[in-house]
Length: 208
Image 1: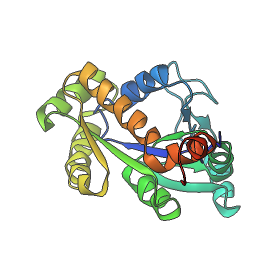
Image 2: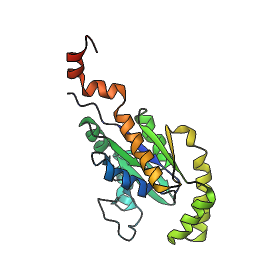
Image 3: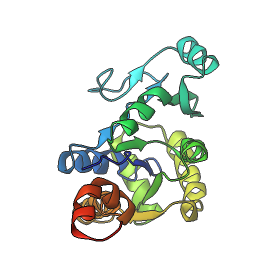
Image 4: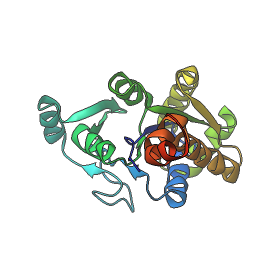
């Protein structure tokens, strides 16, 4: 049995759409999927752990990493940098591990320039009104920041045609199952299965 190269899954969503909770649920259901831990210059939020949620670094360190070409993608969002390690992604892929990137739309575009076969998934809220309710319910942002996030969300939603799949996070359990189904369906793609079971297919058939 031959191990095919791992698949890169890109999950993008407007702030407050529930991306983090859905990704956590996916990883619980599919523990063999590796979550890429991004680097960021923003300060940790309460409960966040360095190396688990993000690699928290200074702006000076991040900009030095940019100059060294360490990032597969990076972007500045609301005044803070976020970036993905290129070497780590390639190593996981070479070992046949699927990798999940939880990034913004700018990063998604950069990743797909390098990996055009990456699977893009966009998580959308049921409505702008519901998104605003969720953002206000978090009680972590000022009214000005919430207004900016809502304006950005409208622009991001216009980019949905760039993605392979769209998951509507109306009812969490339905959205969770949709996200899991996308990953499992991709693993069952004929080309991946042909590589994985090449020896068995050769034994059963005349040519593959």
